[in-house]
Length: 214
Image 1 (tube, helix red, strand yellow):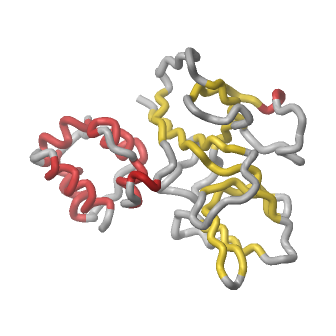
Image 2 (spheres, rainbow, N blue to C red):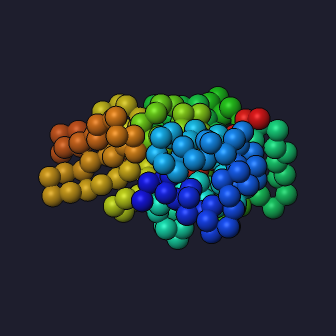
C-alpha cells in the first residue's frame, strides 16, 4: 500500500470528503488530497505532520505502513511550542557526535538545546539529523534521541553508527554476507560493513522528534 492509499484509507475511516479532509488537516485544497491519493504528488514532511496531528496518528505509519506497535515513539516539535520540564527528563541535543563518543566525558561544548521527554534513560542525548538518506521517514533537520548504553541492537532497529570515522543514521540489517546499514531513501545505497571495517554503535534510536514550522 502506498502513502496515497493510506491517506485515502485514513480519510474514508473518518467518512470525510477530500475537501473536508483537507480543511481539517490545514491543507490548501482538496485537489492536493486527490493528487496524493492517486500517487501524482508526494506529500511534504510538513503536510505529513499536519495530517498526523489532525488525525492523531503516528507519521511513520503514514510513511511506511508499519504497525503502530513496531514504531519508534515520535514527537512533533513546533518552533513555537512551550516545553515544560516538570516530571520530564532534560535531554541534551547536539549538532554532531564528538570523536571518541560515547566514551567522551563531557559534551557540554556540543549542546545546542535541550528537549524534555518522559521515560528515557538519563544517559540519552539527541542528535540533529544532517542529510536526506532517511527520508521520507526522517528528514534533514529532525532530531533523533539515542540511548548510548545499548550494546547490541536487533535486525531492523534504527541506530547511529560510526563507520571508518564517518557517522551515519541507518537501519541495522545483518545478513549471511555481513551487515548492511540500510537508508530509507531509495536514492541512497546501503552501507555494507565487512569484518575489516571499523564500525561502532553510538546509540540506538528510541525517539524521533519531527519539527514542523509555521
